[in-house]
Amino acid sequence: MFKVLAIDDDQAVLNYLEVFLIQSGEFIVECLNDSRKAIETISHFKPDLVLLDMEMPYFSGLDILLALSEHADRPEVLVLSGAKNVKLAIQATKLGACDYLTKPVDEAKLLASIKKPFKIRDLKTEIRTIENGKADSSFESIATCSSEMRKTLNYVKKIAVTDNPVLIWGESGTGKELIAKGIHNSSKRKNAPFISINASEFASELFASEFLGLNEEAFSGAVTNSAGLLEKANGGTLFLDEIGDLSPHFQVKMLRVFQDGEYYQVGSANRQKVDIRLITATNKDLQKEIQKGEFRTDLFYRLNVCSVYVIPLYKRAGDIPNLARYFVNKYSKIHERKISDISEDVLNLLNRYRYPGNIRELGSIINTAVVMVNGRQLTRRSLPEYFLEATSNSRYRFNNTHNKSIAQVEKEHIERILDHTKGNRSAAAGILEISRVSLISKIKKYEINI
Image 1: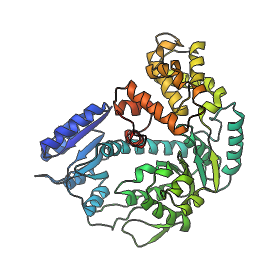
Image 2: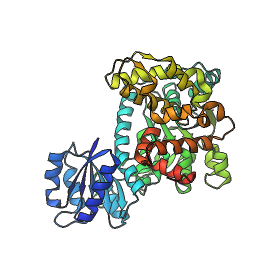
Image 3: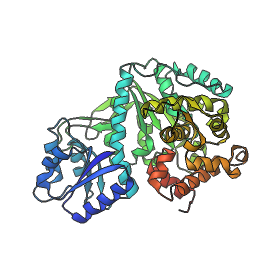
């Protein structure tokens, strides 16, 4: 669990943050209403992230950010301000803040912003691993006995050696990012950075600075240049997942960059060139999004030079046992369990399930089972309750889903998980292995009653 320190002179705000974060079940929380004790409390509590108010007596949020900038092991800082001030937001970002939100803040947006720096931290580790040559060198990690999947991989291997943009599409959890990494590691850019980011996170007020970077002369008080994603990916590959969630406003900005291969950092008049290979992914039908006016036609054709469709897991039935054994081995090591076998009963159940969450969901099911099992073999009793209910209820069996759309199957699956968690969205998002923000979006989309 991550440690979060909230610093605000308003005790009511602190009380709200403490209750909200503790109820999410993901954080250890401490609150401070005296800014004079900020640095001392940070030193003792050692938080992973600080929620920081800007306007406080004694020491302002900028004062605390400035003091923290001198510490190499400083925590991430998320600013919560009562005033929407772009200049102040940029100053806070230049001093190390990972994001800037204005009060009152939407709960889903707040939770997503809190989790974001931890995802970026994991991404940096992943980038270092790839740069050091420790990641899979090609597509060897994608094992399959599906003839259709093998056909897809053969096609991907051919386009990998080119420098063409690639659009990967398919259901959530099918392994689109794994395909993207394989393309990068099989290309001439394999020794350069691979930068992966979820495009839905670009709906931030600080998108421009995150994507394009900040120039040190942009605002007074700025201390260093802040490299954006484009600069970090220069010479390598930029992978933008869930490109269909990118807002129309940012689609325009992105199109200009990829048309010209040039961009300007925020606050700079100097044009910078960028050399990247672009790989994007989506679980949406972008043609329908174009018809609805939600996605630009010109951007679609620039992204869709090479198109890769990743088939859902239920069409790779022969792969399910092998993937299940892979996850058993993986999670047995993580949880230090000695599990060497899967019962025939469990394999039959796994083969009957539809997997709306695809490979990601199969991994989550096995992870739960490994934790719950008492012996050396996975049995029916160790499987998640929602999975057992789904496979025993004919309404959810694989054979009864062939006349249903992907949207209908996904809706029913989300309803089933929410029923299992008694409406707890954080717990349901954890089982589905999607963000709480994505889950709330789907609940609204499908008009699911909780």
